[in-house]
Amino acid sequence: MVDRLNQAGRVGAFTAVAALTPVLAACDQAPGDKPAPTAQPVARAQQQPDPKQPPTQPSGVKPAEPKQPHAEQPEATPTAEGDPWPPPANPPLPTTPIKLGDRTFKLEMALNDDTRFKGLSGRREIASDGGMIFVFKRPQPLNFVMRDCPIPIDIIYVDATGRITAMHHMKPEPPRAADEKEIDPRYNSNVKYENRLKQYPSRYDAVLAIELKADTLNIEGSNPGGLELKVGQKLDVDISALKKQAK
Image 1 (tube, rainbow, N blue to C red):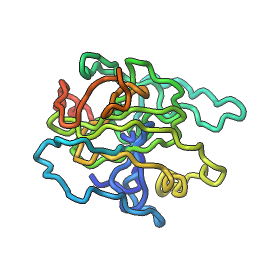
Image 2 (image 1 turned 180 degrees about the vertical axis):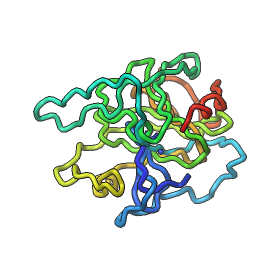
Image 3 (image 1 turned 60 degrees about the horizontal axis):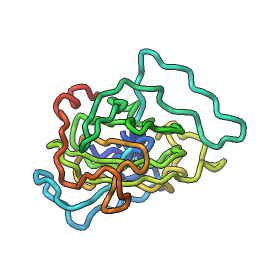
């Protein structure tokens, strides 16, 4: 999902505060439009790479984004009594087939601010061949966070040339405390909650963020038997066609 307290260009979120680049969550992107008064700037790499050159070394962090209307939106299922997690923020979205390595995934498309902001927040399950793809109209640094995400998620960032800029295993954060539930309408989020969420960055400018079931990826030997992808690898993805659908 994607939050936009400060936007430097998440879906990202498919979500950060203050002088932050767009932050999305494993479930969504970090906030980005307006800086929050108490937020701290996101740490950046010491050397900024040339955005025209594809990365050759592993890197990364992730974003969160806003919501998108859908023709047939089912009513949200209320959470069970005592469940600290909210219901899914997005209804099931239209999907597109995306090939990653030797596997094909059916990914829900987060194409606008609303759906990118909500991302996979509140989802209790991701199919082994499912997930979500956050599509942005322009390349930008992205930072996703695990906002209201009860399950772990794997994320891949992709630049405008179709190359992977970063990958991460994202872990769930503790659910919101009582004083983290009230939403500040200026930022569409809770500043205290946003400030404690770990950010997963794209490192280089990206136009796509792909979220998958946890442990789908083998990132630098972290998950033997998982999908073998490398930072700098070019994916078989029609970036141009996807960007035309983004809003």
